[in-house]
Length: 153
Image 1 (cartoon, rainbow, N blue to C red):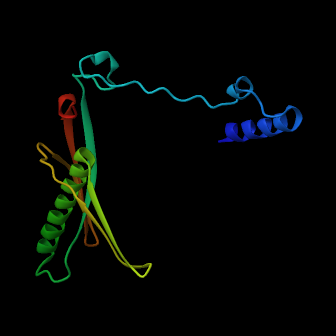
Image 2 (cartoon, helix red, strand yellow):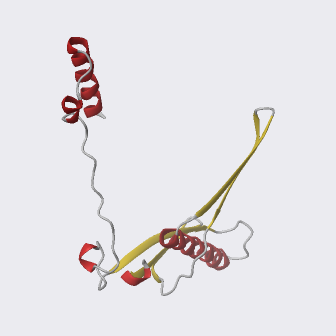
């Protein structure tokens, strides 16, 4: 951004003295465009990940114990189940992505209703439970899964 401001100031100064600057004069003030290398599956030397590598994806799911439980054991079990479901959802979002659908209703140029829906669908296999903590009715579960290179492409 600062390079564009410098180019604008130089261009203004040049245009005030000699008219508009030439393309050659402006060329030296342009920002360089970053080059992006295209990924080719057939050539493993271009890959950031190599076929023999694995990625570790780790998430922490949270679940709250409901107020109307019969015993502390039931509260713990229900909070842990909710935390596990949340952790699996977070893993699915990280690995497969999220579908977002939005809809707005406008009447007489005034927003009447705005709805945003998110959806995720995935098959999570071989997730490992790393740690479970339960404090003050909140259960946190850490799950991790190792994913092979081939599962991404």
